[in-house]
Amino acid sequence: MSPQEFYIRKTAPARRDLVAYNAAMLKHFGPPPRRPALSAFEAALEVLLGQEALPEGRMEKILRRLRDLRGGAPLTPAFIWRLPRASLEEAIRPLAFFQAKVGRLHNFLAFLARKAGEDEPLEDADLTCLRDSGQGELREELLKIRGIGRESADLILLHALGLPVFAADVRAWRLLHRHGFVGEEAGYEEICDIFIRALPEETPVYAECRRLIARTVRTYCHKRNPDCPACPLREFLE
Ligand code: SF4
Image (cartoon, rainbow, N blue to C red; front, side):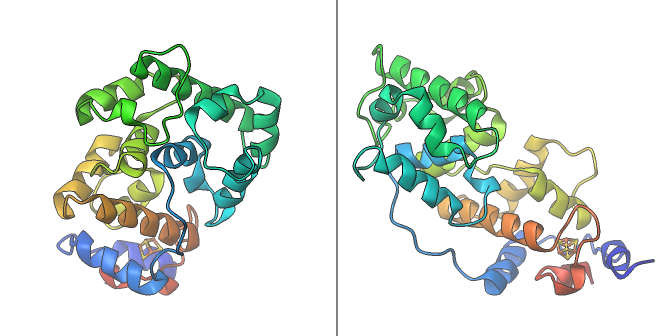
């Protein structure tokens, strides 16, 4: 049995205090680097471009490239909508699947226009057109947009609109599975529910937890050969 298998086998199901997990990860990695505040639209844009798959700091460069097309000014739905597709693709070319991401972004912009009752999206960096809808209703509407799945919809609610919504992903599943919280077949909603029940229902807590899990799993909890001895969560396996 490898050391990693040993650690995983030693999972103690009784220790299911995800608040303590958060604290351990935060102590290890520290708080996130300071960033200038984003508008709601720019936060949604980051989600749609897949910022969480990137190393920290990489998406800021993409946003800068887009803002440069506007003379450094903050981005708005109307500006991105009117941008020639070739310019938009060129600005986000460093991203994987950049052409598919442009399509997804345009679908979201068309949705914003419909919500505002317009033919084109507005200069609405606060996404005010979304704020009258209830959380559940808005989630359903987002899920109808081609290219937006549950995780992206929940991340838009969380990061762009500041709503206390937990967004699960494969990293959260891997961590919970390896620590004995869930079985291999656990689905998206089950993973979310575990965090929602364990953590205070607060937007910054959910956002921070997600960031810390992403960092922990990316650094230590590899698909093969997790580096448990170096991981800040090793104590929860003992
Ligand atoms: S989260 Fe850390 S301690 Fe837990 S299984 Fe993954 S690498 Fe090991």
